[in-house]
Length: 302
Image (cartoon, rainbow, N blue to C red; front, top):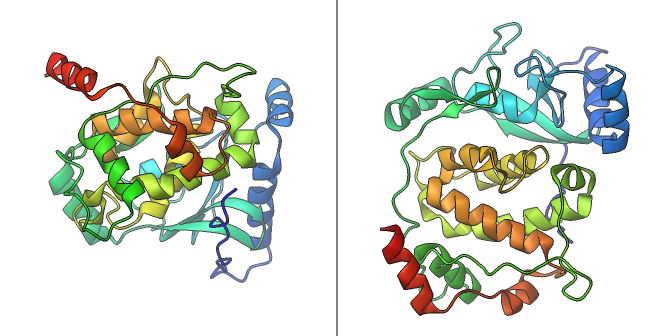
């Protein structure tokens, strides 16, 4: 569904013979089906993340030390606190993940230490989530608004999405049945479905443009929407979008603020459950409460 996933392969700086093995393991981890991973877990064969000690769902390789016993979510969260490898303390310059083959993967470049120090003064102290072992990203200043309306030449569809967040409009729920063709899904379903992941990327590439504060140099990962997109996709592989624990919302709140995170996850779930294959079709069918009800809801909350 989404043709924008392909990126040119990033070559390793190391020339050792073992370096290819790291990429092979990463690609093999991505290729494992959920059923096979569950079977391996029952036999105690699944490799655990060195940070959270839980099974690795999206392998990440730290560069240049090439340690690879990390889950992507855990490693990038760790790097918000310190830019050194949890195992050898080497300075990490990038994280490689989403392996399709030893030479085809994506790369997240770690910001320079000076940038990270500046972020700490702006966004505050760190906090911990995911039980006792999961290290979450720094608590950061919550954005207060979604940015000003776009220029007169802006895509009308994007301006409609801005209004959804400006007015806190949650799309109406549609039941999953044979007539509506809406389907519920679990994190395991999402992790095993390239189609769902592609659909999520399609939606997020447009949706994240709503938040103009992401363009600011002082914003968390400012200007790097592609990283935030992949971060959300990684969250969905192991967390329910609107689970009772609120874990997915907590992880995203550090970037978008609580209300924006909650609404984005709601809209993303509505899109992924729908039978539509293009955003234009979904835009034409998604429904929201009448404006009067929206205003009453906003008054009740405020």
